[in-house]
Image 1: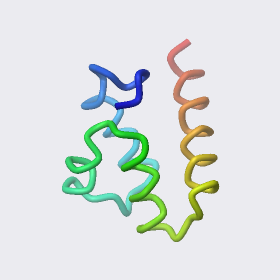
Image 2: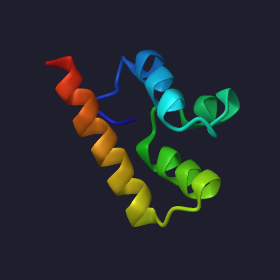
Image 3: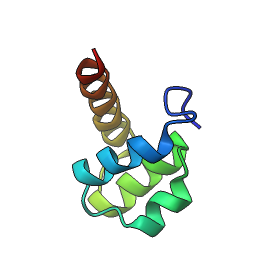
Image 4: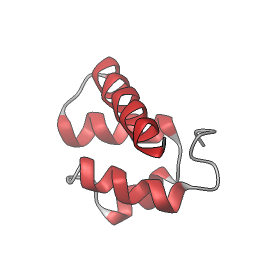
Amino acid sequence: MNKKWEGKWEQIRGKIKKNWGKLTDDDLKQIDGDKDRLVGKLKEKYGYTKEQAEKKLDDFNKKDKQKDK
């Protein structure tokens, strides 16, 4: 589990679903806060390369972190 998400997965998953609407509730249950699983699902659902998925996720984390300030 991503340390940033530890204990906050239920809150973060709604933001992830809003940002990546192709991810289903079942997908999010399988991911369960695991960054590698999320990257895999982004690759599968959106056709991203691993690098693209990781970049999109990093950008999402930075944007989310700025909102928390």
